[in-house]
Length: 313
Image (cartoon, rainbow, N blue to C red):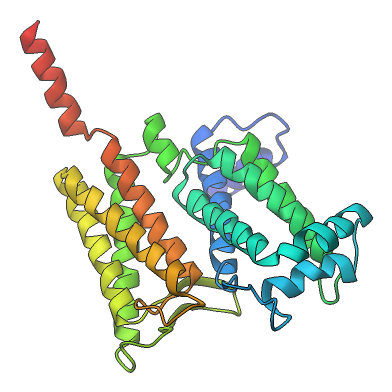
């Protein structure tokens, strides 16, 4: 027993010190998927406080405050000039651009969809954020260096092979598995949100699933929003397990409608679903998975088509 443990220890040490490239592509893909999902969760959390219509301009807080840091605590003079003369004068438009970009980042990275494109967008956004706030009080410049580096890894890595729609298209991830994972996430999110919202079922902003301490959240939902998320998850689950593409399409349509309704109401009126921009991004993530899986033939459909073609030959 002792000899076996020593042998394993020596083997692990030899592996750690080995300078040759790692040959286990599966392990590499899993590690890159973990990095991709972590970055996706980061963007998912950070869209919550990007609130239309003025994004903090009137109160001097929120996105406006942090964008103005580029002028108040300049990192690069040309970027400070651009911010002061081109961005701040049309700030609400800029706010929508940021919200759309960061929502797209959360959705694409979490779902593993066109990951290289997402990584390029994330790289640009990380540089822009760093140039805005890196020299501001209580900021840590290395946070933005690390964000740039992490997205750069995804640009040149293959991070959508595991639990990503890129992997489904490439044939390295099971269509059924990915659908079930996202259906389970939607169903569990809906159930927990429903339980938490019973005290005030129609709140303008329902209970938040997550916490600011670890900077992790899956959004906020009142009872209506929770039930819609639950229905989206059930449609996805039944559709993927039964090979019923119309149910997948229905899940996608309902998820998109929920996200659009939130963005049309947040900052203007009380959202019917009681959510925030993070909630909208999660609805869009589930919707995108459902939509793309509906476009990928199920194994049963493929085998039936192959058999029919063989019979005709």
